[in-house]
Image 1 (tube, helix red, strand yellow):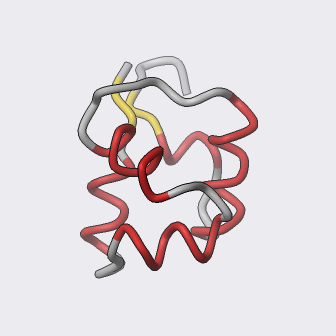
Image 2 (cartoon, helix red, strand yellow):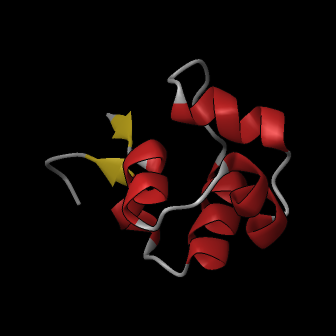
Length: 65
């Protein structure tokens, strides 16, 4: 399963700093998730979805949405 954070950020023209401010998630964590260096916990996914105004299922690419 792939996290689509970088694609969502690109489509909304958002920087890592902007996403951090919008979501309350540290910049380093956003960078790690966007670059596939780590897989976020469910509460982090929830914060990202809420801050980016997307459904939590929009954050990941999976045939089981």
